[in-house]
Image 1 (cartoon, rainbow, N blue to C red):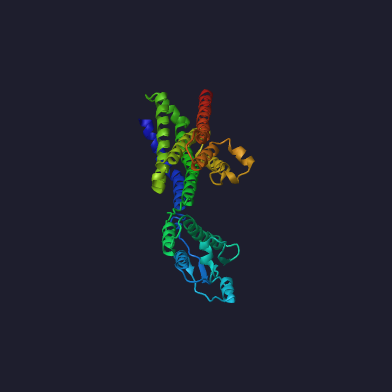
Image 2 (cartoon, rainbow, N blue to C red):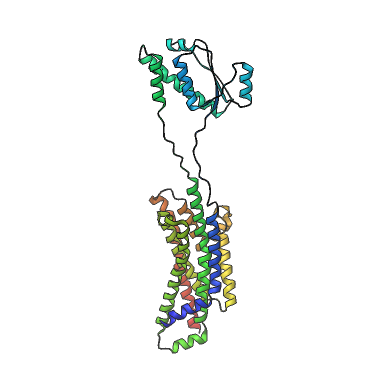
Length: 388
């Protein structure tokens, strides 16, 4: 495995350039993960409305029960019965709702005559709707018992109403914003990985190809007892292992940052998509490595390909913000389909065949790029060999 060992010796000599892409990627990914890390959670709290309760009727257990019910669910503010005092309190928002029980209300209510409680509230406010519902709930419940149970005393009626209205419903506030925010961060992380993985693999594979494509070294290799097929096999093995190694470095960071999320359906799909893109990237590295003739050309070609394709395909700027013309041009690069698949994965709400089909189609296109670029590279290699 001398060729395989030589492969990694060349990689180690060019590790400085390769590390630049990894360090930049890790720095941005880490800083992104720390944004709003200590965001406060939304907590549901029941609020009580400030109200005024004025009773012009005689004191009775029913009125006391009604006032007690309001007192448990609202803040009753003691105010003067004068009209001006009540209006001022409402204007300055000392209270938001005023309840006035008219004279003779209890007697007429129990006899079945049409009667109403006078209410005044801040116009078009949520507290008006809330308090109207609360008052109607108490009186409607009382009406049901009066109509169905004859000779019911005030004390019994109040106890029945309190028992019914004391029933509570548990409120759970689902906070979906955290999940959406996490999806966006992971989506950006894996989209941005295209920049890093493409740069690392192009530089790594190109640096090896430049060495092994050197004419003098090639002639010496042909004189060795190692067959050409064996040399090519070890080069392919080295390229694949380097690809897997670079991919593992990128995804291990995501496991540290997002933990168990990476083992969910979405996380596994992102891993699969990134690995397929890595295969396309190594094919591009092979192609560039068999075209360029010097290290300076390699650096220029790497920067142009990596930055150019990432800018137009949605890695640095969201695809939704790019024009149709730019996206049409980007569709001729594997980056575009890789990012499109990532966006589809993080936006998944279910794992139906219909929702997954478009994602797997995008992955298939990226795989098609990998195979096509590799075939073009093999044709170029054959043409070079024949010309030499």
